[in-house]
Image 1 (cartoon, rainbow, N blue to C red):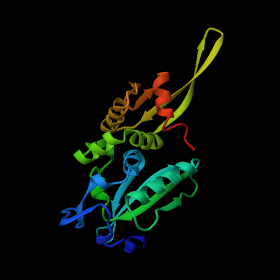
Image 2 (cartoon, rainbow, N blue to C red):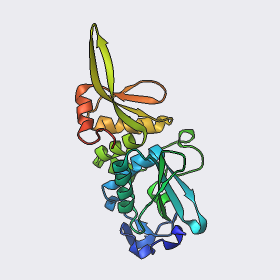
Image 3 (cartoon, rainbow, N blue to C red):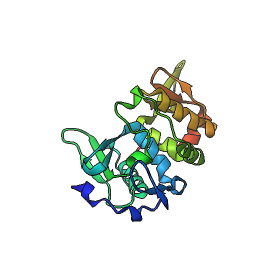
Image 4 (cartoon, rainbow, N blue to C red):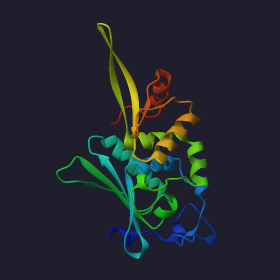
Length: 222
């Protein structure tokens, strides 16, 4: 099985060797050394990711993705490989469905994603740790890109004025968790991107300048 091929602790590149992690037993993590891809992967995990425990305290990270967007699947797979070096993530198509699972086993997932826990994300608090907040503040673009790739979309909104029909691009982010929606809004605030609450689950970005700002680093899904 894949979890049997987990790399040895001394090969973990984000570690300080003075003492060990009380959660996973690895050398103490140096989270500041994580690659920029972590912010993107955090957004993907908060949207469509989950972690389950496997034998021997190995954990499986699964990101559910739409098979219609192969470039996005590739980007997610590369981000996982950068954050957790070792065996390449496995891409597992789902029968009779357009969904694809991107899967990677590691002992370190609970440390990298301390939001992991029992139950659905919207039924429990989702709060970033101090080191996660620092990484997101450093790279809010990648964090927003991950959130939108998982639970957001860019679309054209038709609006009629008299006899004329105008089409305006806009972004929408949808998540059942108020905490995760709040993280999306906080990241937008860091970039001066205007947003507004549409309803209990949806955040809209519709102002032309804000849409253009998101287009710089998100754009349509592919």
